[in-house]
Length: 278
Image 1 (cartoon, rainbow, N blue to C red):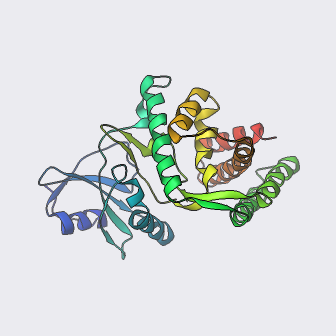
Image 2 (tube, rainbow, N blue to C red):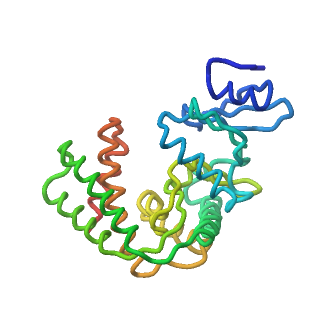
């Protein structure tokens, strides 16, 4: 049993739960640890490197987690000084461990659509231009970084700027969005669970489909069908066009982050998405 250590995550868990032991989980990122309390309950302790990400995730769990009751971890406690959160652990297996093409994979996408639809409907906002303008500005900042790092040529820069202009001139309905909504953040068990709220904020509703579209659905369109069936409605033609412009954000961010982190897989993904844009 581990009472406490120099690790802020273990210190917070010990303070709130008493003596705990670590439950090794190789699928968790290094800054997250699963612990088991004396009564057998499982919890997750997560420490952020950046204050803004910590504050954003804390706000998400306190403000919007209630819209996902039964599908999201509950905030147990926090330590602002060390940017550490203690959360209940969700039961189930990560959805990205389901075999590709299996019924389990398709069911996970259907359930994911159903849960995301609940969040979007509960937090929906009418169409407006502010969201599009903000996204255009965000994309332009990624374009500038890509140009500075010499990651794109003139034609590619112009293509991305074209999509930034589309975003800046589009009206979009908004909602609270997860913004990293993909199988690695889904837990499939008796109930469907969603974790990792550090990117969650109000944004363009359809943008929550972007990572799935460009990382999963284009190669497996039946998963898109299952997801949207669970979500409750298909995409309109206008939303499909917007999704392509969100792909420009996906491409630019992947190229820049892949270069910065020397992540060849992420860089290749950015290059692939960029090549698919028109």
